[in-house]
Image 1 (tube, helix red, strand yellow):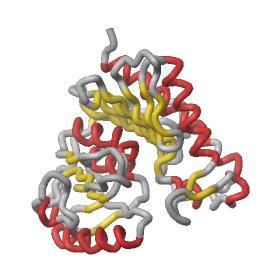
Image 2 (image 1 turned 180 degrees about the vertical axis):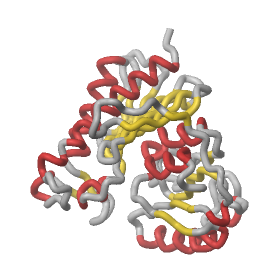
Image 3 (image 1 turned 120 degrees about the vertical axis):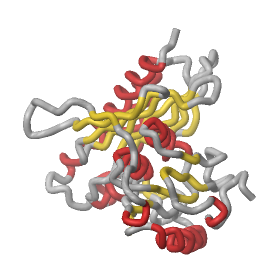
Image 4 (image 1 turned 60 degrees about the vertical axis):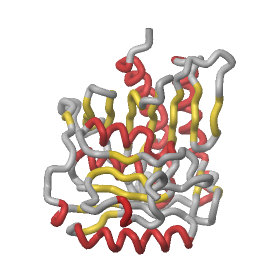
Length: 285
């Protein structure tokens, strides 16, 4: 019988495999400087700013290798290679983002991560892991088992014990609102106007460039709330569960595909009702 603890162990193994590929960036640029397109097989997807690299592809292959080896009857949905379904499916499905924050990665900005999460036959997200190699941090959560974080590298061999996360505890008015922006100019302009209105209720704004890490920082309590329009399932699958298990409210998009039905992802307390968001969240019109 499959247990959530077993799934979490596999998620951690798979995320570590993807993060190990990303950590090899230092071999290309030991000083952490921006990478040239020719060095990393850089290409674009939906726009000139929507980047994909050989690191994205190799990290997803590494994650998939772990998952298909350990769970050959599970489906896998990934950012780069879509969904693969076995002939005799188990009912479990993994949602993976091998490199969340590709633009940061290319430019030498440390906010990027591998994200791995699994959803069960009943539609519940059961386990999720976000592994950020450049930050030396990993976050994880188990449904009903809380959210945790730990340092994964350091100058000494004695790393501290994992810490259980409890989410934001400060006042929204003096806190931080985090967000991200998509690649379509029209969508980005509309979201920026909405976020500017929401910002009146916060102390300031942060925009890190990785939805997975943004969510984890809400779980940390470093950021009071996060809201972004147009995220995909692989962006939020692990991070949303981590926030939820840390005790903060989460509103997941109603559809996994942002191209077909873009929607709002919300974590924490925005200090305002959902009808202030424009476009309105799906299901609230």
